[in-house]
Image (cartoon, rainbow, N blue to C red; front, side, top):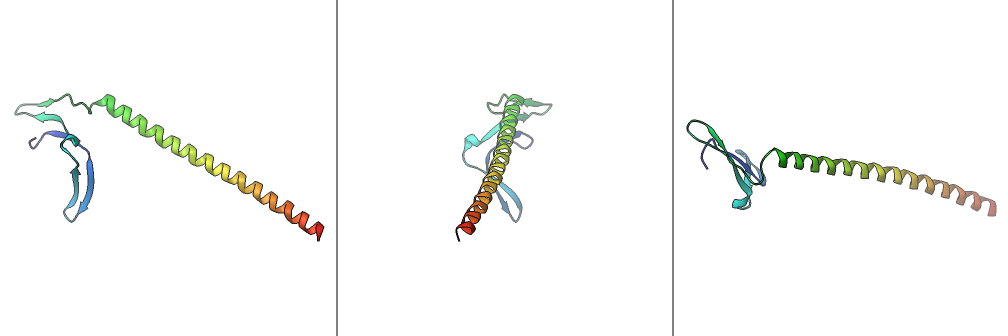
Length: 101
């Protein structure tokens, strides 16, 4: 790799006094996307890069986020229903307790 090359890297991001630092775990975590030559930029066919993979990743992340939101809303509605049933049960228990005393 040289200055001017475009790369895609995956790793652990850490904060230091000088700024952020990306620490790839292994050599396979760095993909060279394009190489800057003297007169033009040559795009390499990276195995993980490209618009198709980006679209698939975007759709996967979006679907996961929407699923999480729907599960959260369902759990909240279900919790409100259970709380309402519990509240009614306490009222009935108090009525029965008052009539027997």
